[in-house]
Amino acid sequence: MSRPAQSFDAIILGAGGAGLMCAAVAGQRGRKVLLLDHADAPGKKILISGGGRCNFTNVNAGPQQYLSANPHFMKSALGRYTAADFLALVERHGIAWHEKTLGQLFCDGSARQIVAMLLAECDKGAVTLQLKAPLRDISHADGRFRVKAGDRIHEAPALVIATGGPSIPKLGATGFAYDLARRFGLKVVEPRPALVPLTLGGDQILFRELSGVTTEVVAHAGKASFREAALFTHRGLSGPAILQVSSYWRPGEEVGVDFLPNAVSGWLLAAKRERPRTRLRGFLGTMLPERLATTLVDRLGIDGDLANLPDRKLMHAEAQLGDWRFRPTGTEGFAKAEVTVGGIATAGLSSQTMEARSVPGLYAIGEAVDVTGWLGGYNFQWAWASGWAAGQAL
Image 1 (cartoon, rainbow, N blue to C red):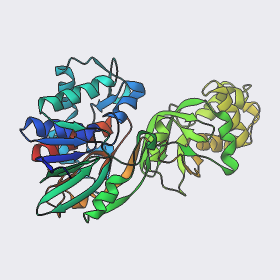
Image 2: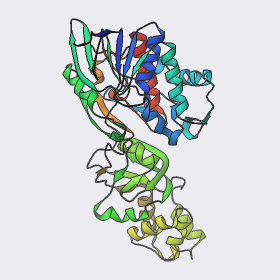
Image 3: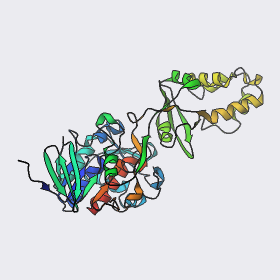
Image 4: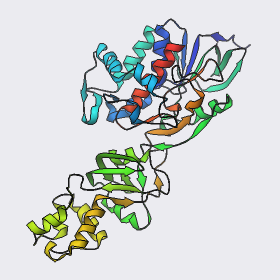
């Protein structure tokens, strides 16, 4: 005999950052909330973030650090639940934190503190958390959603999609959110890996021999540029600067790298005047890692004492070093991507409440939605802000 359906005010699918926040906010507003996840523990992506210390937000978080087909969509949620709001929550729970470069906030201790904090907030709202609950079926009729998870059936007038995107599949990530959205008639912006290493091939394969070499650069793709570290890998390019531009890069396009972002125009000609007997290779080796300097000089095809190199060749070398062009063969895919660009189209959602315009009671939040932040705590801030917005509306 089948069990009778359990009734809730809202069912939230996915116990990641956005789902936990949404459940806590709605529960504390007096809603009877069920939070479901197929995993054996909540907040798995939180636990591995920031080297285990969770880069939980960024003090600079604003709409300009996000990608979306609609660059205005995220303004409402981010404006109503800010980095300062989440930091206040962290401090209320007595979690010690510190600020790193570029406004990034981390736990002093462990990312587990953030998960524990969110679970405590859910407990405060009497949220029912059901783990190891694979979804068997989801239906919608007469204004109610019916969810079969494991061997149990649940019903609610509101359903929240918070199952994230397909990045980091080893944590159980899938494209489930998109399949479910399409079933309800919502459009999906084609998802692709973001914050992901780029691969090199062809005549640029020799750069792979620099695996492990890192240096500060300005990298750019399209109109976006970032000044941070770049790292050469056995497959191509990585490091914060490259991960950042990967979100803007499209297959077939080039990525430009300024290897000497501190150099002023004419620096090589000035070096020729001041240090004429210095070899180009040796001089570059004072400004860049030696292995990288050697490889770049080899690719430039010039070397020797600066005094013996024509000005036009030095000017050409300076221009190349300031905008070295790589044409990646691809990315390392969703397996290595920190997040996903694309997702459930914002055109079908309310920016105020995250509710689907065509399906009353259906919501989508977090990485499942076509909103993607920069590296450095911005994606968590979108999870908190979108989860809060939906939690206020449930």
